[in-house]
Image (cartoon, rainbow, N blue to C red; front, top):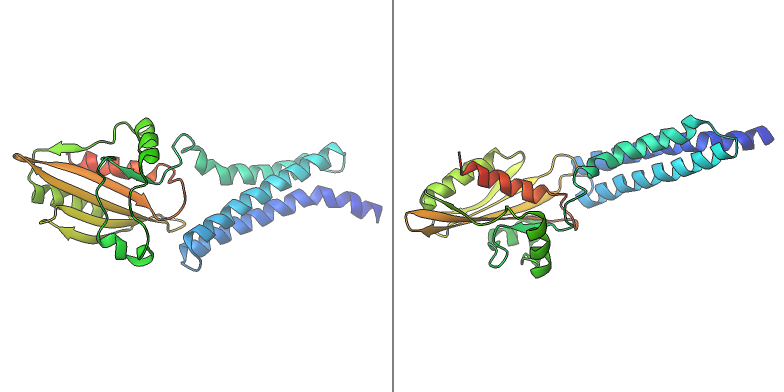
Length: 236
């Protein structure tokens, strides 16, 4: 009986590491397959991180008591590190999920308001707090002027958006100078809404782009990166 009691702390950390891996895989797989909502899949993934950290703590305690091995503590720690690693690349981005090149008069979503889960949702830009954080983190994301006309500029941007992985065109109106689209993330299938506004400016055009996540408080920098890619395409 005593031997069993002493063995339990040695194996608990490893068991929790294994459980964390299974839970993380379940969260990703279920969200990817559409079995659960993206946020639920992400919560399961986050719970896996928590379990692995608890396992690490228990493994360390067991080690300090002389009832555990280094492996019992390192196994869940390695799992936690592997699960958390993707977030470190975006640790310096602000906790905002709605990015616009024009924060004073952001492009408005029209068709997106009736697109799937957006129906009845407030799609208005969050306001001054987001604008201030965006200005500090992404000072390069501003309105862009190009030498091409409105329709030509819209057609070019529509082609770029079509090349984005898992993108869907929602609306295209040359008359209104507007494109709306969505892009879905690879693993958890989070959906971001995109709107492009193009206005005539002499012989050229003025371009503004807004990209907004449907879920979460932070977008991990994805929306800003998307806008940069679309603006850069206008230079080629």
